[in-house]
Image (cartoon, rainbow, N blue to C red; front, side, top):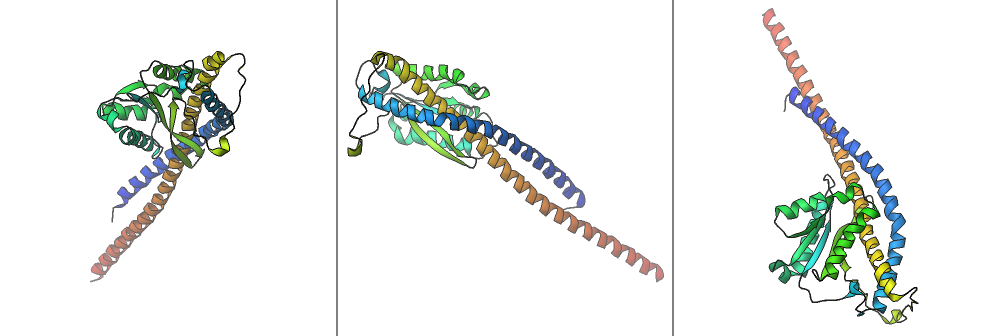
Length: 293
């Protein structure tokens, strides 16, 4: 059994760790509340706008004035990996990175061998991994989470859209954690560009007949790009809320584990202290008996 000093040092160390994890849990809970409100507010609007976007893109599919839904032969693709800037959030980052690698190797094996799959990372944990492994990077935007606003996200989304329109990339994929609740994050893979047109069934035979106002050209030039930027912004808000939820859960579990470890350490300390007292009493009694003799 460890001596009393060693146990006291461990108790002090675990107590300090528990204070840190408990404080981090409270900080993440406060940040989660704000992030959750942001994603809940934008999600219905973004989902409805995405439905309109797909219907519009379907109705003008093949039109040379609508470059956002053009399907091309896959010669080069971009995979956008949305991770986080900080760790201590469980498997949040490792799962996103693993899914991105899975998409690249299983869905585009030939392009991977030809080194025609580029990664675009948002979040330092993701960029560190791909830079260390020497994977080709189309861009790194770790600073977005420092001030996550639509105005800051728009230029990044516009840059990615320009890469697609210019023909530099034939497909753009998104890999991120979607927020469900504080304890659950849904690992999500989405096609960002070209705009994915869902296959129709018999029940969907009626197509929305849109009247273009002021003109179809205006819709393509203004509405579709803005809708794509909102979809991109929503993915970042989802990931941001999911990160705080994952960190809060991880710190809650760490605090509980520290509490259980402290209970065991205190029990061991009491046992060691009792054994030391008993040993000292035996020595005193033995000494007294020796003096009598």
